Length: 282
Image (cartoon, rainbow, N blue to C red; front, side, top):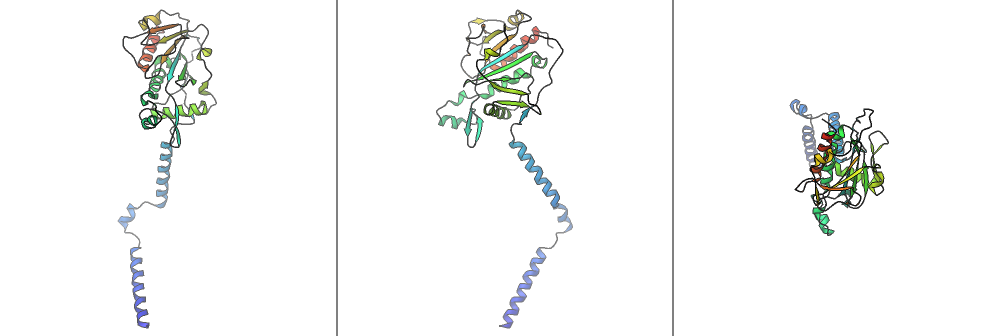
């Protein structure tokens, strides 16, 4: 009995010795490759911060562009973008702006046509307006957007719009749920949901011009704008949808500017170019 215990004891010691050898400190070459505990914690913190930044699609506020102020009161332009497809839906556990690329199956299950959900049209249209020299010169007075569901909101002319479509959708989702978006570090509302109709916010005496491919009156836009009064505020009503017509009941003139159907962004680029030529904006 005693000998068997002795044998077991020796085997146990050998196992402990083997384990101690395996737990021994690494060689100098291995030690150089292993990160220090502090460095590993720092790298882990950086990775978590980067993941947090990627998940945050939209900031709490929007940056603003410095306004061009020269002390002179000059006529400007106002844009009304109608029938924009901006609809919020609950996909999974989050509220998102529905679009035909990411939510086609979701829309089909609800017997909706995915081709009608094109928020990229209004995104491109807004970039065409806010990237133009017309806006940078301070001649843009306001932009009003009316969604397909009848929600009307105003965008201030000194807003810096998101460049990517994902961030734009996040911003629109936040706007339609919270009803306003403020400037970074300020209380100024840059995007604000307002009451219908849009005519209550237009200046008195402003000339409201509706543009559509189906209009009977065809004009040369550059000549048409050049003939307008110098002190007259021009309001351009443009459709921001994939198919259909705008509401022309409140417009003073209903015109066609091209023999071919144009996208909203292309149409707005032509309008901005005509106004820049009229007002000599280089």
